Length: 366
Image 1 (tube, one colour):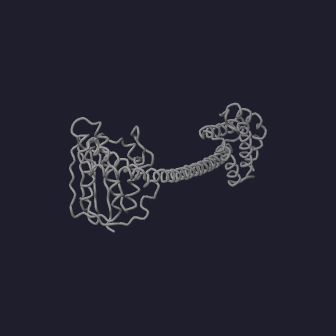
Image 2: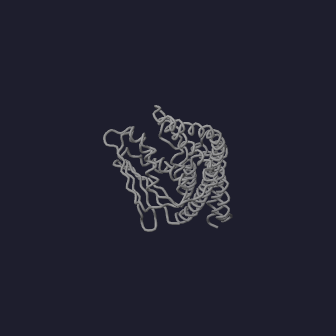
Image 3: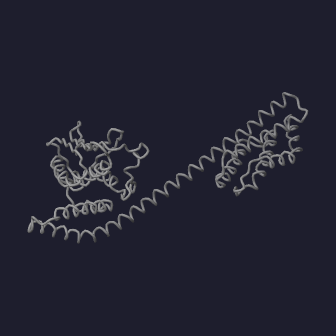
């Protein structure tokens, strides 16, 4: 009962302490609860007095802490301001008690109880505030992911509709250019026209794959990786000559892959084309190295170039849709590559240094 005397002393000085707290507390003018902060301080002051009287428990303090945490979260306030105000309140309570003529033993006992009350309140308020913030962040993250997926779905539908409409005349023009080449083999510029049309057809195929409709009605097949790269390098030959790049291709002729040949062709063309793009801006030797071999029960294919390093902070996002560093890039190329490779049960990684950038693809045996 001895602590009741100190609690009564606090009651008598409540008005002065609360006024001092109101003057010195940190309150943002943008805080929607700025008129409540000194009232919360007053409520906490009374809780301290009641805690000295043993009229309230930790559960009562936790309930009040939860209320304050909800306010601080809704106010979007700086939690540092709240902690400052709690420490200020503790300081004012202890200062006013020092004005009383209480025995040292009694004052020490009261100080332990007061600190315990403030500590319980502070710990539970901050813990609850953190839980609320984490929950808000998780909701925002889910909202962003849903919005992102919705946009990708809409893009896929638009791409599919546009590309199918676009591909019909493209196929006709490509067919007629091949007929012209057969009927007039010496006709100038036909090779250039055919190559440009093939490049355009390749871009169209990328959008089809983004729309998730590129693999419909197709059958898997077992095909030679070496022969596929031979075809790809022939297709990209004009670009390789234009860049003046040196290509080294070492593929085990026995290396086979079970999957969609056209899709894997898209992957390898995309990665090599990207390498040619970065080498275009490089001075000195321009090298692309392609390797294919077996590692235990996996097929490993690497495509490297000695172009500029990809900054470390970009390596983690290069496979994200719509990410691009090219001025006129679509940002879907590497995203499509990753989608195709994962659809084939494989993985793709990228490592980059000032010496070379390596794209590695691994496929487990079926």
